[in-house]
Image (tube, rainbow, N blue to C red; front, side, top):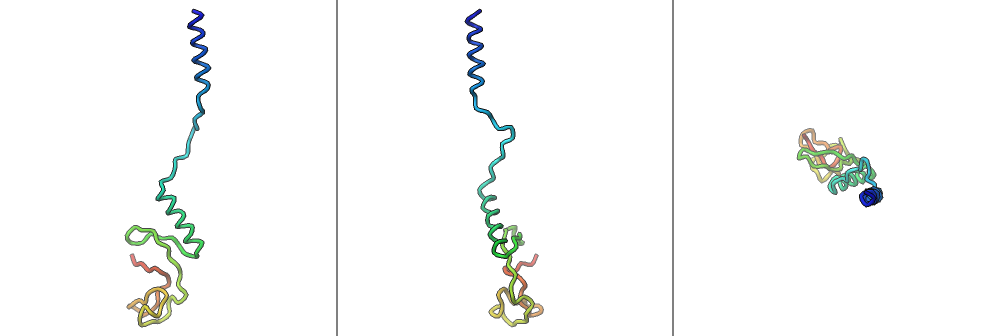
Length: 97
């Protein structure tokens, strides 16, 4: 009987030595989400706006200084010269959904 009690006490002591587990561990973010978040922060720091283009890809749009100016070719614009209206785009890159 004493031997059983000794083993029981040893088991209790050993059980108390286990490392504590976090009750709600935060899951690690996938590397691609970490990279995308950094790219979005860099975009905002550069004065841009992170947007999702028509292909589902995140891009950084930056306002152009000559948006709305009349043009005859894209060589005259920071962005593109729109054929309809012959004006420079207001942001670059320019995506129409």
